[in-house]
Length: 68
Image 1 (cartoon, rainbow, N blue to C red):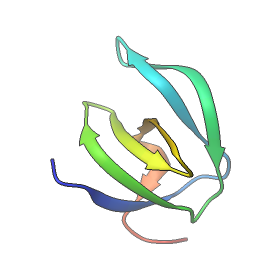
Image 2: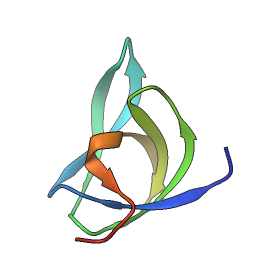
Image 3: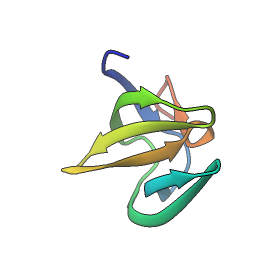
Image 4: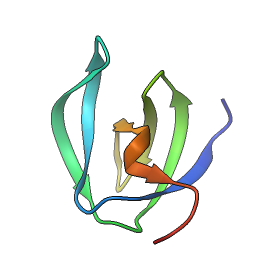
């Protein structure tokens, strides 16, 4: 998957260190609604993301194609 860009759709959306059996494990950062996020890979319910120097996984439901 080529890198794409999305926006955080929920306030204080967590970035997880890993995904195990469809569940995010260990929150490593939280981002505010409207934050610009780079997605680099895709899993069933999660995107692999880069934001603020951190790499991790975010739930697809916490991201949007549009700001706000």
